[in-house]
Length: 180
Image 1: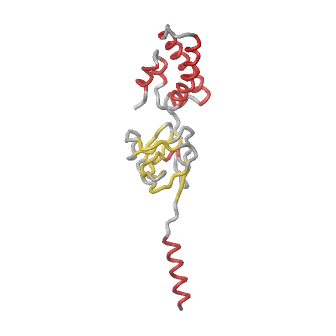
Image 2 (image 1 turned 180 degrees about the horizontal axis):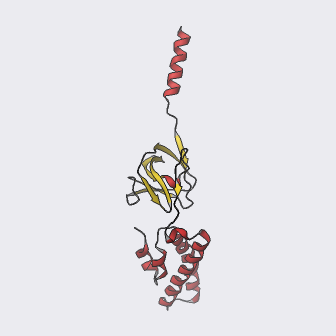
């Protein structure tokens, strides 16, 4: 009888342990952990591509972002609890769908985006060189080496309005094109 009671207790203990449901970040540029299920809510952290998060709840509001319709998911990431858009997670029971007509910026594939951002960056750096008349050619070259990868990465991040960036003629004006 003792063995039976111990066996039942062990089964109950084993069954009472919650099994963690996890997902991985599928967005190559990472995914923002937010304090509420809304893309305009406070950023808590940037979760990197392919990192794992613990799923708390999958019943957040449904929204369409970047051409993908999915629910917001409550997650835990490195001790922080918040919300992530489910369209960029490899959820076990995923119900995300791509929409037919994404916006202008979303239609640009990676290759075209890189080309467009390279042109934007080149134009901004050329303007910077023209304004910086007292700089030597070597200083301009070093500035170009440092600024080019940073500006390209920022441009390709999806955080900026590309139409706006195309009209920017100064590194200082770059931030004015950040999407809200």
